[in-house]
Length: 249
Image (cartoon, rainbow, N blue to C red; front, side, top):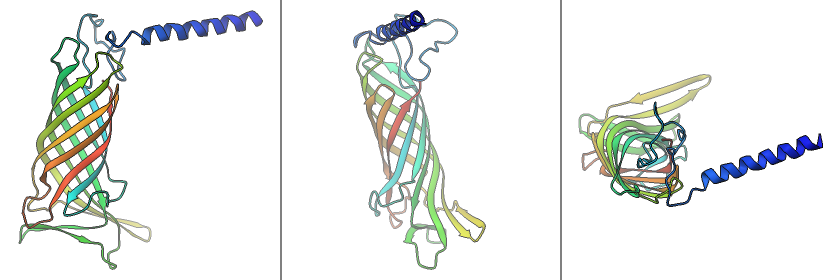
């Protein structure tokens, strides 16, 4: 039994050493496997050792959504959560892929949970925001929407799979839907009212964003330059996102 325990400890130590040797190839040497959750997936054929490694091709941005303009930042509910899904091509510009361009397609779902009414008026062509009154019986109010856009990024990172990275980019796209949602509780009934009628909804979106982090993780921030509503007499709001980016491939 004693010999078995000693042999088991020796095997365990050898496995740790082997793993350390595999993981510590040096900052200047690229990993033979791709980064992210699919490190060991190389397709139908083994990956070429000489092939330049590519990074951050499937990125999820888990975001807190807010607005700035006529309404102050960080005044909305903390549960204003959204998700950006980014399918990207990584185009190396240098031999070690320390500088690259990222381009692709992005889908964004955003929710801003606030404490008021956002109402569109088809007659005047305006969209207004009013605070919740004592007679309102809704439990929560939401401004949500979906958008599709084309992102373009300039990427900087170290020549290693364990790298610090900085992405500077922007997006241009289309706001495919924008809605207000009110949820009320009447005894045992849950009443949900949705409204998609905003006469001056800005369908064109364009924004700038940044990611800064390590390996598969990064902090994310985004600011939309155009207003949510185009009429200058409507409430003037710019969409803001901040959160965490996870690169899986």
